[in-house]
Image 1: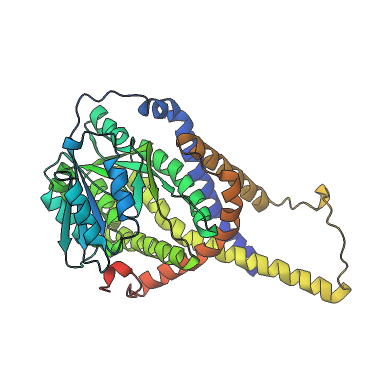
Image 2: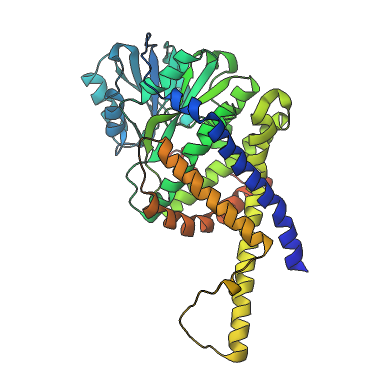
Length: 421
């Protein structure tokens, strides 16, 4: 009886998942010609001025490479300003920034402030900026040389676009955890592009999202926003009916957490930040005036947190029950080892199995399309098995913790940017 109830509750989740995947795939094939045209060679007739903020907190290991990637951008240097904001670091971050300021006067500027969190560092750069466009690049991220030009073409072609997000990959994934993330980010290439075609992008990520300066004049500066300021400002933009696009050829690389602990805490911060910000902006849910974002992607993502947690628990329960039945059989008739054989007669042909196989096939199609969209071909065949095996173990843990912390208003004592160390 319990199993029947649990199975019945799974069907709405499976239906929503299939609906979500099919909608995005149909949207892709309907807009494929337009997507291809977006990244065709486009001669820029005007190069707007651009300010890039690089907020830093103890980033001595990666800051130099981050700045080198910005300085290598194929963009007129007299139109580019790089503001490195040291947020009270205790290592050599400020010294590195000052060294670059001395080497590249008029382009790189080193700023310093007391520790106050990433949003305060970005806002300090925002106050200093007089450029037409403004963006942020995390100090552990790196841009390809053509990335800024690709993004600027979107602003040139369509004056209604107020922000453009890039295509993000994990830089040189080596550990199993990073290779798992490589597939996760690869899926994000497709979903972010499709959300862009629906005017429903969910987040303007820290690694090199670029905004028109007037965005901040209309909706204000960054907020702390439960340690996910990039998601909150996206919600504010949708609330103000400001359009966001995605450039799937604008490559940005970020250093993903190398350990299971680092990955868990990062995803916990993202999941909890999403939940708390979504609750803060719940007036956007199911409102036609906010288009596909309000009617579809935001409420769907919110529901998926809880359904994803339930699906994980259901899978664990089903697995334990299957193993329990196996142990009972062994205890009754003994263990009789033999070589495994494949027989279609014993293939599970119940309805849920077909649905799961169909969803899995569509996931493979999504990953394949993502790999064709981006100019950086990922090691799909090498990384996908790791993703398929490891990722399901993390999902119930960080989602469960995020839901618990949100419901019981636990303090984020584990978030580094909230502490002064």
